[in-house]
Structure formats: structure tokens, C-alpha cells
Image (cartoon, rainbow, N blue to C red; front, side, top):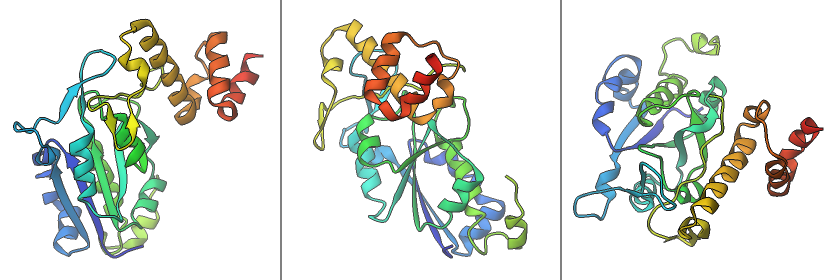
Length: 253
């Protein structure tokens, strides 16, 4: 593993991190130069005169979505060797094995979501992996980011006094949410799905349901085991994700 780890945290509330990392093991690691922590305020990368970074969702519905432009600019400022992690309840459950792997990297970029989340195109273009600290929803990704930093940083050599102690460490019903999109309609060659621009609420709802099923099947298939799927939904999943949906096809027989 590397002797130094750079971590960039992209957030709307950088002051939330002032206290947690000024004490204990993490503070000492920063003082020794074993770890670098950089808090980046996403609002500082907005071109809006009022530094607004959110907008209403295409397709309708409550809540706001973080726009792609300021997030993209913030991520691109963290260096070409970055590994981008989006903190989201939809992500893979975070485990000790993740900590061990990530502590060996040089440059981690942690993206903290807020509101209804981020524009889906950021996930497609920039995010390397998505992690969750549990099957529950928080007001934002800041606390999960703190959890990751604490867990990962202590595995960097020299951070914990006795490395032997580190080596001995142990370790709602429903669907995942569908993708979200906001302005602009075109971003770096990717477009908002036409159905979300159609104004046809029935088709929007159908698209949302299907994309929720698809995302759940691909990311957390165990969540579908006790979910009653209609034949139409099963047929759609078998067409959209044939390899992943085979287990559901067997289950329905």
C-alpha cells in the first residue's frame, strides 16, 4: 500500500468536516503527511451568479437534482489519476474489503449527494463506483464520506501505531430508485431520455418503474427475491438484462 493518500471530498457543506478530522488518528495522520484531505465546495464551481447548483427534475416529481456542470468541473479539478466514489443509498454496501482495496490508491474523490441526487450523466461519465453505508437514507453523503475516510485512512501504513492490530480487524422492502436527469438536455454527448421530455405522465411512470427494476436487478438482485413481478415486468427484464434476469425466470416457474 502507498505511504500517502489524497482524498478530495466534493460537498455543498464543507464546514461539516471541520471537526471530525481535527481529532484523533486522522488528525495525526494529516499532520504527518500520510494523508491529504481536500474539501471542495461544489458551489464554487457553479457558473450561476448566485452559485445555484440544483434544478427541477425532467419528467416531474418532488425535489431538486444537482446539475452536472458544477459537479463535472469539481471532479475534473481533482486530477487525472482520480478514483471517483459516489456516496448513495443505491450503492454497493461498504465493507472492510472496500477499505483494504481503496487504501492502496493514491487519489480518491468522494462525491456527496444531496436533495434527490445527482444528474445521471455524472454517474455515467465520471463515477467509478457507488458505495452505501447501509440500507437507509440520510440527508446527504457527508456522513458516509466521513465513514469512508475514517475506515480507509486507518489502513494506510503509519496511520495506526501497531499495524498488527489493523490486520486483526473484523470486519424497506422495495426497489432502488430510477435514474434522474435535469438541465441541460445535452451534456457531453449524452441526452436526457426522450420519454422524460414527452409530457406523457403514464409513460414517464412506466419508464421509472422499469428503470427501478433494472437498477435493482443489476445492483441488488436479492431485493427482488420476495417482490411480486408481473409477467410484463419479468418479460421486460429478461429482454433488457437477459443474463441477470435468468434467476428470476427460474424463480417464477
